[in-house]
Every structure is written in structure tokens, then in C-alpha cells.
Length: 295
Image (tube, helix red, strand yellow):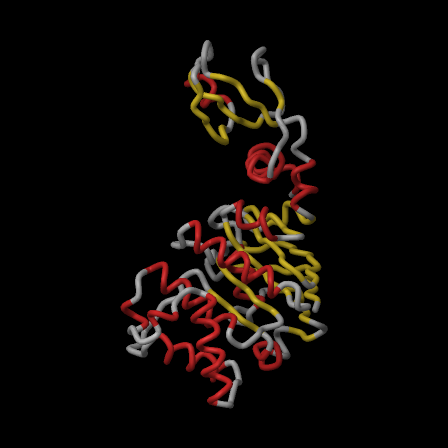
């Protein structure tokens, strides 16, 4: 499975450039799409799932042009939008059965087996007879995940999938995606939650204001941040000056105040020490110090 994005642009009717000259190759496995709100992530995904036409450029999915082969692409596609909602009075299992029919599963016996399997996988089996529109927010999100996966898609696109999920549910979802990514499928995970990408994605891209700022592995982005992540204790330090000067990542309580982690190009604080970066450090450093230089 392969996606080739070539010189992709999207300009809305109001003149806003949502995507500008995006060139990207995506192979089988877990692919992370990271960026702040308004970066163009949802626009890119809506183009990939054939819900929106690009202004210019080309997208090929296994050689199929998204503007010419929409029906064929939709047969291998699973999609969970950020604003997934239920406008239905169907019970939870009935909704999943309906989703399975839309995915092309004609055998009733096979559909019901898959319905029970995915209700179990997302922890909703005990709620199978509850009306879908009466589920809690987190349970609706899990049902949305199940409907996207029930057709065994070769291309799965999920937008902010862990929004509304508690930590245990988030881990369950990550494990499900990891299992699917081993089956020659492409899973595109769009999120602003860095932990979702650092834990399961082999490759990623970073969008900022419609531009492609970085493409590679999480480890490669982290490497760009080496030497630019610091920690300092607030004991004897003007914290207000610190937070107004540097982007702060975290504060950790200690017996002597707080250990503050921050990123910077240069530091003039004698008590600040360099520490090993992680993906969250790298993301903040990129957005604060590197993004404008890439366009």
C-alpha cells in the first residue's frame, strides 16, 4: 500500500490557503500527522478520503487517482472524522451492523460475528443493546472507531481519535491500531496529542499553517532538538522571567521548588542543564524556532 501526494494545494473560496505545495510519500504502517489546530490536517484527510477535491496537484493511492477512482478507493477505506456523530435511533449493535453493510459485508452471519468482535475490542459489548445516540461521549468515540475498522480497511484515516478517551481507552485504541498496521495497511493518525504519535508511529509529518514543515521518523525530529532542551530549578530563579522568555514544556515539583523543562536556541542561565529531548520537546522546539525557516 502506498500513497503519493504530489504538489497538492487547497485554496478555499475565501482565498485561504489551507494546503500549499504538499509533497509526501506514505508507505504501509502507522503514519502520524501532527500540527496545531488550523494547520491543515483535517483538510488533507478530507482530500485523502475523497470528501474534498484539491485545488491543484495529485494524490495517488496504490496508483489510483483520488479524483478519478473514488469508488475503488472508498472500497478499501475506513474513516473516523473528528466530528463523528450519531443521527440515529439504532441500537449500538444495529449501528455497527449498518456500518458493516456499507463496508460491503453481505453475509448476515459474517456481519454479526464482526459486530460482536468489534464491540468486544472497543469495550462496548455490554452496551450493545443501548441506543447509539444515548452513549456517553467516550463510548460514542469508541463506537466510531469500531465503525471505521469493521470493514478491515487497507487505508484507515482517523482524525483526533483519542479525544474524549480516558488513559486506559487510549492505550486500548493504540494497541488496536498497532495490530492493524502489521497487515500491510496504511493508518494515518491525525492528532495534536504528541503521545499518540510517539508511542505507535514509525513515520510522521508536521504541518504548520498549511505547509509541510517536517517529514521523517519521530526519532529524526527528536534528533533535531538535541542540545536545545533544558531543565532548571526555580529555587533562586525568577520563574515569571523564565516563562516569559522561553517556551516551557513542563514543571515538576521537588523539595526545592520546581524543576522546569523548556526549549531554547541559546540560554544565558548558569544553572540550566541540558537534558535528553523527547517528541514533545521536539514538537514545541520546531514550532517555536524552526517552522518559519522551512517555508
